[in-house]
Image (cartoon, rainbow over all chains, first blue to last red; front, top):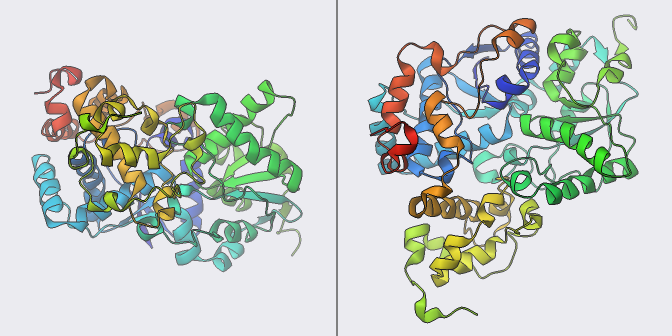
Length: 299
Length: 168
């Protein structure tokens, strides 16, 4: 399987260790990742989609045209990038006049879009194309004995008609992927609640956004035995990690749940070096890999 | 109280020309589960739909709440009338940017200048993680210029060239 890695902005700018984890773990699973040279911002919803629709769709088309030229679909971890591109594609292909306008703009840069390349979320590819069985047999260390909770990226669930590959009301894909690594995934009342980290919520209303996040963390604290939180979206990752520092500073309760992108956890279970695949975080994560069980010695 | 005699009945066509918007019966499904409905200035999408449908232009112009949206799109899933509430929030943002350039997000000139919302190259950090250089826009000779030439043709940049290094 060959896919074009679409890194977005936040991953290379702030969490390139996640990019490293994706590159090494996907290679281990037999997926060839090709670069999309000259890719640009997805565009993020707070940029062109909020000011100019032509600009939005031209940039969306720009990124998909690079993948199309290489004959690959796009592999995306960031929820917003995935949703922006997927929705962009839906609009471009949804009307002949829109597609013509996008191609008119792209022609200025010598580019063109037919619609052959599809944006795919990384959990969709891992669950539906690779499969939990293959993932289970690729690991050398297990999370046996550890409890996890999962954070489903909203942008991969809604609107299901455009972005969907999981059950939008009762998602299970990320849960099963984490279970494949040996962890027990605990359910809790706020499991399907948004992290609140994307868009303008925290930027316009920091105290309210943190109170919103506190509901989720308090539910994790009181209803689960979680040792870690697993996400598959760069915004969920950075926000759920960092907001614990603010909540702990501003309130009476201390929160220190290690937060991992799924592929970071997978790469660690495959035996890759945490200094390369999981080196950047606010809440320390080394306790988790120290508790992993080696499957090599068990056999 | 709003005085509907001052309202602009065709405002919806300027903002969000979607016949579906008129099917909104104000049920509030778009608000239930919306994180930004808890924002400082709460995002209450059904109220925005009302403002657009009734043509309350001034109220809509001054409304900051669409900018609190987390973009999760849950409302699109929940809306029983297929009004596309998230698309509406974005459309209101665009309409506000068209009539008031101070609404244009400051990140837009940054995006125009480099292709990203922030500096993405991180050369030293990438090296320490064993990653090759990022295949970014700047690594393909001449591509940044083409990217900017394309964007100069879109309305928001054409009409606000002063923000984009005199783009036009």
